Every structure is written in structure tokens, then in C-alpha cells.
Image 1: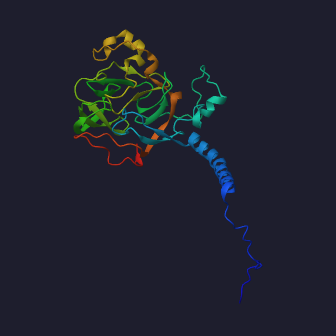
Image 2 (image 1 turned 90 degrees about the vertical axis):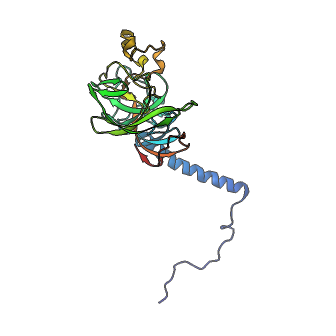
Image 3 (image 1 turned 120 degrees about the vertical axis):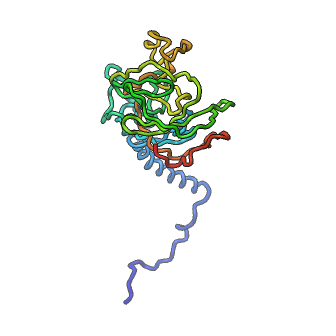
Length: 295
């Protein structure tokens, strides 16, 4: 039995199949590109505003877990949404900040100790990434370089000792890598330089309501919530509270202090890839994998 195609065997119009050339080709490509952008740009904006966005790591404050050049997927939904959530800051174009009501997040949720958090700097126009160490009501203190939470030393064990050269320095430092485990079981690596360092000893920081306390995993190469001028009243009461060290009088503009809940932008989930190599010294080593590496 023969099946009919239902299509007449008409001669093919060669003009219709002729390839576009010259200006016609450019016009055709421009239209195709424009249609693609028109379709996918709104989808991309929606995803980066509500689901995930990509952030690059500019400093060493979270070494060894994050390296300069790492691209990190940040979960925007982790702590709720506000006027700063939409991509490119579009939300700030159409809304004004209500300082009388700082907690304006929709679907807000409380962060957890140990989260790697992306947040807006409370006193500067910067976006930061640190590890959340203290929740409201917690008492945080450094004693001889050892983290204490609510009067208890946080569990830690030595992983290795090596020499590490911070970015911009020619001399390598004797460094210890620890595995630190918070009271809720979250575990991660930290770096600690040998010898006395600026924030080895601090007063007790009592985290206020609706705020959190942030620290970098690279403990002696991180400006974070331990810095004295983020706690100017506490520093004025007792300038020697940081292990007897006195610091130059500075402004609060560049220090973090306690971070308000409404400044939290998202939770770092995964290192998707990196665009630069980890800095190596003869006695140090780089992470074995920096592609699709969970945090």
C-alpha cells in the first residue's frame, strides 16, 4: 500500500531558500538577537532577583573556604526580600527606605550560625561576605585567638601548619589551619597567624535584637564585627578591651559592627567556578576543587 503525503510535488522556489547576504543578513540577525534578549532578559532578571545571583570574591577574608576570583551562587530567598533584592538595584528606583520601620523584608526568616552571608555594609556602600557567628542575645568574645560563644570555647582542632603570604605582602606568615565547629554542629576551616594579632583578645560583644555578628574565616586578615570602631561606645568606655591594644581613632564609616537583619541579602551556597588561581607559596597548597564546591 502506498501512503500519500498530502503535499503536491510543486517545484521548489529557489529564491525562498536563497541565503541572506549583506545588510539583509545583519538586519535578520539583529531581529533574532533582539527577540532572544526580549524573551530571556525578564526570565534572568526574575531568577537573579528571587532565586540566585552570582557574586565574585574580591578579598582574602574568607580564605581558605573562598579565594579571590571565586564566583559564588547566592540564595536570594534565604532571608526574605526587600527593596534591595531585585537585580541592578531596580527596587530602589521606585521605593524609598522607611527608616522608622527597618524590618521591611517579605517572607523573612532567621539566619543560622555558620551561614556564609552576603550583606550590605551597615556604614558604607559595599556588599560584604562573611560567616555568621553570633545571633541576637549571643555573647561573643575572642580570648587568645580562640572564639568563645556565650562563655564557652568553640571546639576546634588543628588540621595543619604552614606558611602563608597574604595578598600584597612579600613575607609569608606562620599559619595554623583549624577545623572549627560551632555549637549547632556547623563545621568549617579557619586560618590563624602565629603570634599576637590585633583581634586575638576582645571585650564581650553582646549581640542586640535584630542584629548578627559576622567574622571572616581568615581570622587575622579580615575586617569584621570584631573591629573596635564598629563598637565606638564600647571602645570609648574601655579602649584597652582589645587585649590592651590601642587603635588609631578612626571613623565608624568603614567598620562593620553588628549587622542588622534587614541588611542580609542572601546565603552563599556554592562556588560555581573561579577566574583566578589560588596564591601559592612553597609550603602552602590550594584547594583541590574550586568548581561546584559547596559552602
